[in-house]
Length: 587
View (tube, rainbow, N blue to C red):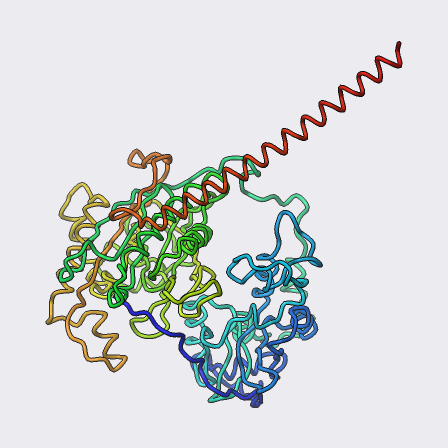
């Protein structure tokens, strides 16, 4: 139901590189935490000077600047106009190197450049290569249209919320058209943790020295390489998929159900205007994720980010037109955690027994358990975690896709898996995972969702199954989407963005519900059942792309086997000649 779009402009058209003087540390000391602002955060940094690098500078120059200045991020400017064009972080440089390292060529001095291997890993002319450190900063930076920023007057709580919600570790501070600096989680910690009157030596002796040095007997509490991981938890997924009540089609949503990984995708409906089926891309993405899930499960640990990346490459090979949001969630094979990769405004909620119930123990870090203790009395469940969403503008979510005029170069109208929000959240047996497209979240607020689930659990007596819960939640979402008298979450957000909208928002609705169970629980399903995707069949373009990839893989295996066979033949011939020489010598 969202729209396709052109890339939006950055936060300002002509930002200046002149740093303004933030408030002094003395003034900051008079502030209480309640009124600490981003200006105070900047004042707590070692230096208030803005550090920048030219867009055409090679990566090695940027790396040296980061090291020499003890910084973790640099503002990128156009050397001819002084206009800010992006942000470069240490992570960007590491990803640049990692994307160019291959098993065949591990030398940093001979890595191909952006010209030889594109940022999206598409092969190009190898003759155009240069050493990796010569790659221009502009090829790996985060461009201005993808930068989120703070202002000096924002409070420290607003800064923490933005850091947590957007998943970024570095956020520039913008005052009008001037960049004041960049803050990180470390900046927030330094501002909130003053020495408290202690001397520097006292602070070091009491804080650092007792915790310095890792014992030589320290071990990694994970299975050794090649040893099967012990899955501690299990999921029991079930799905309800309801098409748009007014379109008369099978819907534009898609889903994936697997023993360790589940997912949803929402095809962008505005492709109908160009005669393109919006469902094809979403279904293709979930089908490709299903096959990628199977392949990666055989080869390595199942990671939603890797599954999404592998599926996206298959979609690019198919050259299928369209776009979609996507959210994949899996169980960690070693820890009692969920891992997720999300692009756009689909997402998930983790529901947990309310504090005081028999199954509820102490709050888990990384969740909303502590805040839930202040919740409404009488609640049996609370929201332990809600996944972040990503939008370029109202009703314009992040999306993976391809347009008819997209070439082989990156298309800034769409996101890539590198833009996905990646989260890890602790889970416990008894938790309920609700994964859905925006057809649920746009029509059902969290209180109504909890009411629906608690009513069903109480009414069932023996406890509601995941299928019963998915059906009930989807039915409630459809009911509210057709109610013109309610102020739906979508209507409230629309009004906040000066858009006149009343009532619910009819849309495709896909709800996937899973109980989190201990592996020893009798209700836990087997771990080897085959993953399924739906609804309907995948697009033929994707099937052709997968067949091509399979043929290439078989050909590569055949070449490898042939090479090994030749090597074995050569070894046998050498052994035969050596034996003949020994026999001849003895004679």
